[in-house]
Image 1 (cartoon, one colour):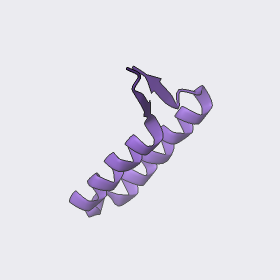
Image 2: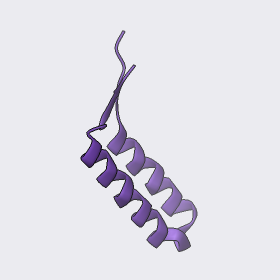
Image 3: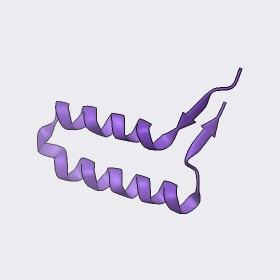
Length: 50
């Protein structure tokens, strides 16, 4: 059995939940999200195979 997880959508889901729970932290959450997505793109670690 193969499980294919993609990190980008998982980070987006977590960021969206945090924005709903704590809307005052929107700027920080968006900044952290963009940094994480940028690092994933640079280092090519976009998927995890379990």
